Length: 353
View 1 (cartoon, rainbow, N blue to C red):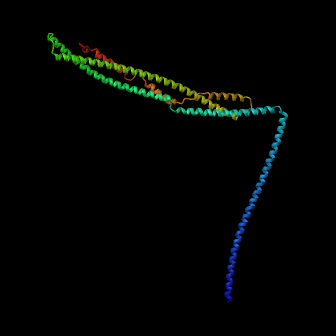
View 2: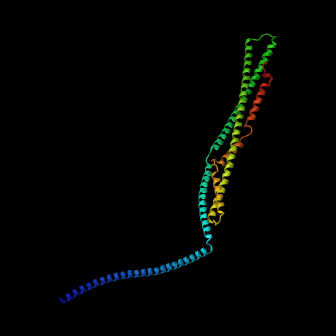
View 3: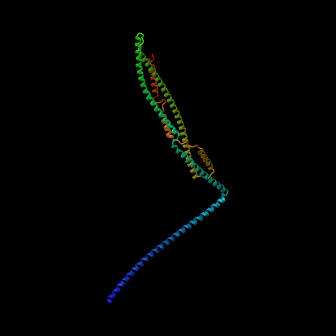
């Protein structure tokens, strides 16, 4: 029994020792953690102390520098009061004057910037189509229409010429028949022919009169059309000249505006440069006067009339080049009319017997 009891006590003691060992390990770990935290706190405190010393040193240095500056300022003030007491009010007045000049320049710069923006916006608006462009396109379309009418009229005149040739051949045949009829009538010793032949001759004469009347009407119509087309083309030329002159005037106006805006940009650069390096002198009033005059001149500039100069000029140039002194085919039509008239009226065998 004693042996068994001793074994039980030994096992219990071992277990207790293990438990104590675990407890001690845990306590040791906690102690290590606390020691680590304490070490960090100590290091942080030392760092703060060092920074505080540095800051105190910097603060003392700054205070010393400020005191030195105060002493220097006091010495300079004393010297100025002793030596330049009479010039101080004058300098103060000049400083006030220069401050006022700077304010005026700032206001003028703002005004110039606004004017510059407006002028640039107007230049951008030059790309918008305007009335001159519409008129130029209208003239161009009208010229195309007129040329088309001339081509159609020319084709019709050629077609009429073929008809006139056919009529001419018919007249030749009719004239031959009339001559044969009159010759046979004379060979019959003055005896009257049959009524049917006389009626045929009358019909031929009627047809000949109708043909002559139709030719005269066609000739009058042709002359009237030619005159109308010439008047229309002359009117188009005059309108084209007016548009060309207007475009030239607008082109010159825009060029002047562009030059003014370039001058404005140069003035703005000069003003900004003068503002940065302005000197203490009485010449600033001249600068103020010059800038004021520039602003007034720019504000007095009339508004730009928006129109695309480059596109309008190109279109008008193409229109001007396309216009010839005489419309296409007009000489040929006139010559055709003249030739037809001569062929019809100058032939002796087309005259009435």
